[in-house]
Image (cartoon, rainbow, N blue to C red; front, side, top):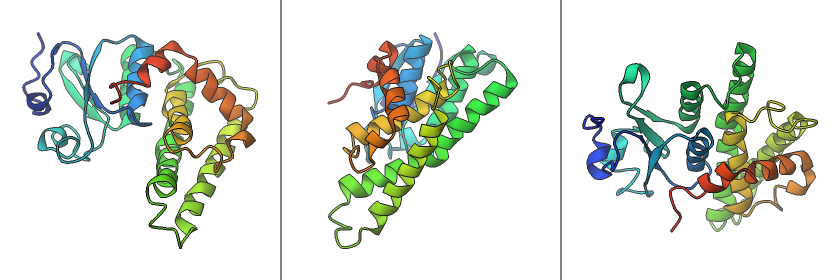
Length: 235
């Protein structure tokens, strides 16, 4: 049995089976990236629901695994050289899982690096911009009622990013063509999140991006996606 005692997070959220991957997450656009990838890869894992705030992501135990205090994070008891490893940042976790299994990323170097370009496009663009749009559109609308600039800024940048995806997906099933990769997983979850969680489809004019929406629907039809989108279980 794997020894995870070096990870303080396991004192607050004990592992029932320390021999499998421990996932610390919530079903948010960032969180479900990892649960979806784990389902797609068929890797055994144990999910732990980590709430926002001082009893969850801001607790000392969680901070010991992710100093940034954000979900998701994982512990893999079978990391490099067979030693346990703790990881945070959804993009880094996806790359790790893809390389660990040799799946969800092209085998050739050129394809791998092109995939990583699109992963970074999401991490540096789609995630932050969609997240800020959602904040001002759904959660802080009353605070900017007399100043539309914040919401408009992030709305317009989110639409620009959607146009980049729209062009990329012209004639392609997935971002890398015929191959479904971590680039798709890390990105479509945010596009769907802005529609389902933030209720921003009309404001972001999703109907103007048919390639994007068809791509999201293809992803949502995958059994592993349908399961992973609800892990850890919603209240």
